[in-house]
Length: 88
Image 1 (cartoon, rainbow, N blue to C red):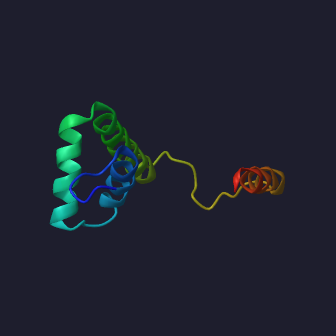
Image 2 (cartoon, rainbow, N blue to C red):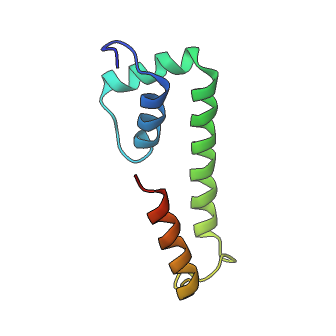
Image 3 (cartoon, helix red, strand yellow):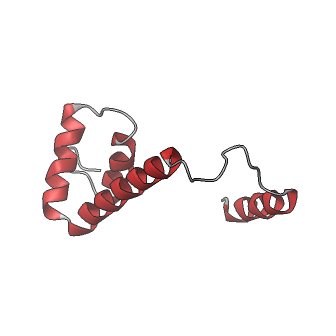
């Protein structure tokens, strides 16, 4: 990473991070400069923001499924195996 510019990988990581906590001004400025030039990262930021809003609105929806419902043991096993096979 250059000291004065973030690459796309760094911007995507920091955009996600910025939605959970406040970033230092310097990092926000670097992200902003990158977003001015990169339509792909701008699109990514917009999509992450939209997903976050949809998840938040769904969680607050009265018609959403009961949050205490759990997955079957078979489904948990399939997910566990998929995670194991995808890890380095």
